[in-house]
Image (cartoon, rainbow, N blue to C red; front, side, top):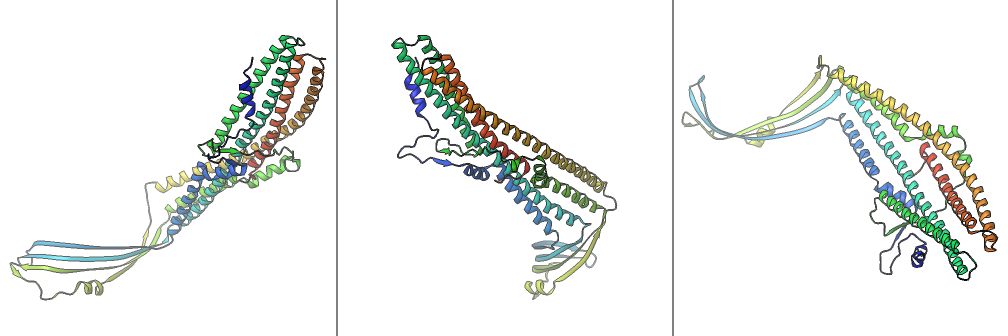
Length: 457
């Protein structure tokens, strides 16, 4: 005999939401859009993508800065003391202790770098666009992934409801058979068979609830939420309309994907970046010209000065601030450098840049081919989903009619238990097929939006 208390407890948990006590923390109910927003905020791919965009921005700034003159300032203080022996004019021995000060301000400006700075600046700006497009594609990927997981949770719940109702039907039939066996109207073998069927239905419900809980935890993990006790997900209507005007024709979808996919635009920009890198390294064959200038000055003050033991310390010295102000001198120059032979460094860099450019073109072509293939597959899956909806719809109607007819005859004693049980299982399978087909239809339309690049987080 089945444990009645266990069945009642199993059926009473009609909702997957954890109970909330009067003083306990409130359970936050998340919608699909809430989950997408949380995913876009907490996702590792988005966090790193934002950092990549910021990094690309700093690289653009650094490349732009090469057009500007730099400015450097330096200063120093020296103190020297000791004996110096002079033989050419003496001989005599001089002892001195002196404090010396100096400063300089210099600046240089690149006039011509063989187009290196220009090419580097153009490549940096394109790289920033690539980083932004990569982030956009990561957001779209998260949108699809979260939607898939959310729809799986919704599907699990609906399966739980169906299995709960199916178990309830079996429990009621078992109760009815128990009373009929007691009065001798039904064979005990029918009761035993029903008890086995009820146990099987109970196991289906247990497994369905376990899958629902696992999928809920998996979705929360994708949202980077570590507590499954204080979050739950709201139900949502399933959009299982075919929407043939939007998804029925393949060619417009292919053209839409080739026009709107951000990863294809990113691949095309990478080709342009590679071409600019070739030009950047080719600049090594050309001379570079720069102009530089600066202001320089120094001053000193004697603390002690003796020559052959005689104090030669001057009675007065020019003040340091006067020396550092009046004796300033400047310099301006133009510098040109041309590497006649750089040990094949430029040639090697250009050759490597050409290889990278060729690889970038291969990646772009692969991306284009992949887009076309993915849209074709997604469209074929969509058409299959449309056919499934038609098939399961007819199957559900037939299964419901068959069950109603068999159940009526069974209650009148005109058919046996086996026929009644089989029709119940066929109806349950048809109901599950219908729910799965509806969710699959909605998911296939989302997949087409993703592969055409029109999905909007």
